[in-house]
Image (cartoon, rainbow, N blue to C red):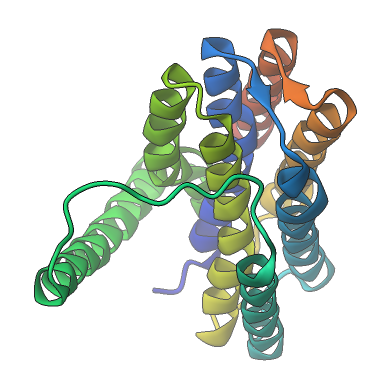
Length: 247
């Protein structure tokens, strides 16, 4: 709809929120241990996806169709690597089995809800940006991205209460990988045009890469994310919000 800053802001803000706000809140509930599969495969792939996305946005100020195609190819390659990589502890899923027809119906209904919600979110966020005099990039980075990350937040807190650290970090790093590659590919392939938001393509990208790198380095160094780390992650989120909101 002609507002690429809103879309890029959503990706950047969601990535920052995932590994600062969401991971920080979860780590306040319980310390989060990082397994070898996370530190050796999942997290490096996620960090690479985030850095590549950031570089493409930063160097050109937009995502071209060619760059969108590159991100799409990288997404497929990352999925192949993850699917073929052995997991640390594979536990068969338990619960009631659903028929193929019921599963398909629920999937289509969920997809329809996502598409409708996306349209309402974009139109509402655009109006907020106009009425409050804020950039689409900041609205995408803050309000829209927070809404995008709410499922991760709910999942992370629930998993933290059950001491399911693997689910938390897999969900968050996986979400960031998909945001950067799939979301970036979508923005590029539709030819969204120039982002035209210097704070988003400057401080926003730095905050995104910094949050991801800090979470990974702390976890890889100590094999866990504790409460002191959680407080630092939350501080990164607040600082990023203030940086993009001022001026």
